[in-house]
Length: 352
Image (spheres, rainbow, N blue to C red):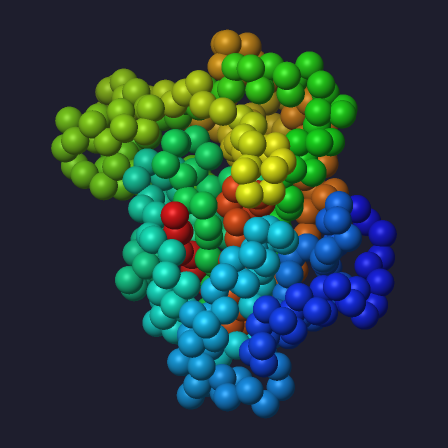
């Protein structure tokens, strides 16, 4: 996984780029990339071919037309590689980003039941997690705790950090394979019983927490009965508490999924995001808990290894202004590194 990938790109990858994308896209290499189990670099990184008409800001429409013309190839590349970073294209504003998302034509996935504080900016564009940016957000698949999760995520860097603030990504099947090898009994229990997520939500967002969405925001209503109905559709039970707070209980839900596209099992869960305890006390939050679906607690030893493996296997490419990253949420976990030197503004759009 960590061997240096040969330079230049293997001829078979060059052929794919040329035949699939015509004159529009060129694949490049970045030092942070890692080869996957098939030898292809993760993630794929595409830039405009020099002198194409859409390399100037005035020609954003050229990029949109290229996306529409080559969508089948781009989708195939996303399925093979898990994530695509588009770098060097004329995407400079929230409006530009929304146009690019629309050009792909994927249906919108709505953030009902989501646990991160978020705000709609424009059209299909939202803020990413609004928790303090100097804090780590652990690895997770987006909305892995509900049945109606997004299958694709778009990230857009409107303002690049001067230091820190990367969005690390990692191929989920690698985490599953390594965890099964090291902790086969733990993984077997996860596969058999799934996991149960429990969280306490207040009525307002708690901006200090990366899972601090209040129930009114999460279920997009101020009516408790409507919240209960929307939660029930997601397999979540609401237990109302004092001070207008609510305990949400979701599950058991799968912690491992079989991804039909890649024909691999994936570590499809929010274990790292929800885990708190002796192995990782800095992530502990008394308003948040997780257990195996049969009621057993998580193994501290297994979770400590899981967090280590995630850090070892991930790729963290520093953001550049204008970057757009498309992530297959079924194949790839993502996280956030602490921001060291502001500013940083990364936006998101969720798709089915």
